[in-house]
Length: 351
Ligand code: Q9C
Ligand code: ZN
Image 1: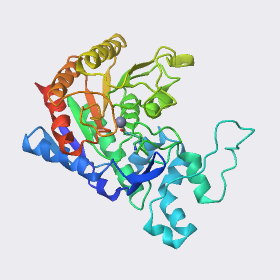
Image 2: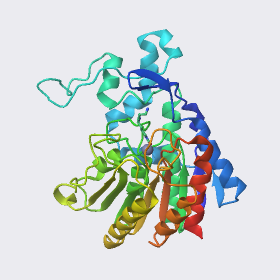
Image 3: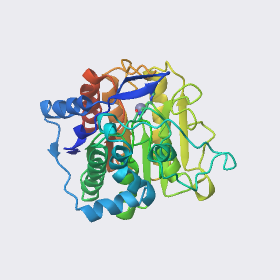
Image 4: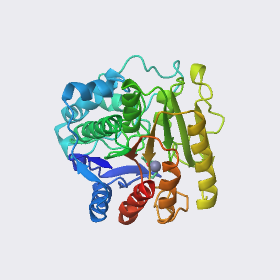
């Protein structure tokens, strides 16, 4: 297996996220990725590569998934933040005002000149700080996703986009949940564009993959399946219910399997087996797995109870589909164990 790791990931290093009325230290830290990379090397699982993608191809792949105004916003956000006030260079950018859905109450069609206001137009939470290196890190992460999709397209059984910030909460024109560019969606769309007729995305992060679901909701060529904490109680709260089945031509091509906080491996595994059957019934030509390790019992912000050894089984169950597979690294905040858990999964896939 080829792993494409993001050489610029540590340029994105948030200080604080808003949590229950106060700013707390970010959970999504650079050490997460470093632990996964070190464990891959320790067990000599596959080979490590930096993504080599030319700028025009990368921009085109990002534009297949994200709105051009949103991409331009992200590319220039830091400079605009600092232009508001030079002392902002000392602080991460976090939004504090949002235009909610009702168009008669809040207009979204007249983006304010004020940058702090525009930050709220594109962000859906105050937990996703943006800083000087965010764009470089996120864009290089998209290159990892594209390189992994190309490797699979060129005949590799599987490839891993080892990158952060993660991606599955980012939608066509919104960021949040620590995510800016949707790496899994970029890989899925790249596989479609390379000629794979049906691509399945099977999201196993603890949190519902709201960005990915939104991107493909009206499409029958990309099946989106997500196993996650029930949005009644778990982030991202406003999407991820079982009755969201897709719309228009995409009706029947989205499957949500919400599970209660406290779910252990037996029930989680039964849901995974259901998800795997849905992918098989769809007759997918390729698979993308947004691989969140925050289902771990020791995760500080999540509520499932998977143990390290369970991830080997997860990898084995995913491998039974026999599909060319792109893995993207998503959540997982038990930093000391995230490398062992991620590599257990990948090793299980290869056993
Ligand atoms: N401060 C991913 O796993 N914050 N994103 C919850 C804890 C949002 C998780 C409150 C969690 C986002 C990729
Ligand atoms: Zn997560």
